[in-house]
Length: 403
Image (cartoon, rainbow, N blue to C red; front, side, top):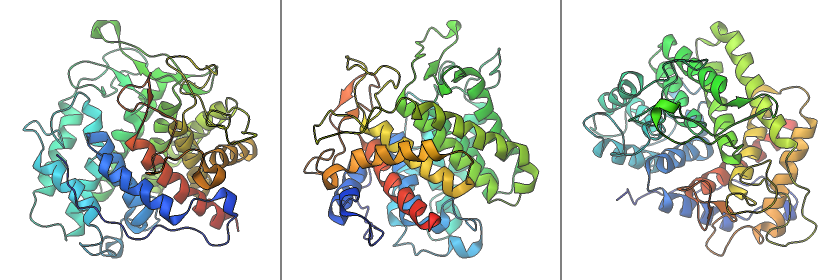
């Protein structure tokens, strides 16, 4: 089960935008509704909570320069924050004795995606009598001391994405380091901010493919008796870029920012690497409204002929574009002309015919990779709904920023 009472009433759209490149309030409302209804597993709920915070409660998002200020924590009433608090409540109520939020799962890292909403619930002082602080600390300790780590090689010390054996997944960069960083910023623990950066650097040392300027998906040492995925998975690169952005923003807008000059530079550089690598693989923009025609990254970005494991994927495409717009407004990185052009091409492909091409009547984004089986095409993807709301929000922020 999952909490049922999530209500968000305002879906912002920037007035005056060209109709053919926008999505209606009605469609965005459906996207949001499907996101909430479909958030059944831990990382889906954590991504949903993060999206709600960024899009609808931006003053408490790490992308807000004053997110740690007491006025930000008091900016929203308990009833306004209820969508996020309900997710946090369910996560705590179902926490395992070991500390895994939301309940038992096959991925240690996924539960970390919920940690931020629990920390936020604790610090708003409006979230009832749940043991928020205890629950967040248990989840933190489980990741830091109760989860296997890579024991050798350039990524030695990287926290495994799996709870029972060592396996590094690019997905984990969105789940674990942002929680470590946010917990550290809120509790004024500089070492946790540094650990968040370190975990990203260790993951990059193992998964980054310099010849492609992209991340591979999964590395498991031979002793783990678990599979590897050396493919350039579109969504995995999006997860990594978006996770690094959250850590970068958390550090930049924290009291410790001045102590992390080189780390902030590294993170921005590593995000740019992914955006550069992805850009060269974006297929040509669509010339008509054919469902499968151009403008979308393939599931494995370098394999651009549809097979049983790779196909056009709007989910990873949306996350790529969302992270590009966010990186620009956060850091204004140099030499982003081709990258911005790619993000705009991808967004316009998704938004084609006011959403009539890539959304069904219920608001589900399509075509998408199966979120529960990353080498299969899917019919519905909860995380894709989150990525879409982030894309629309970040695009509108970029438009305001450049004016």
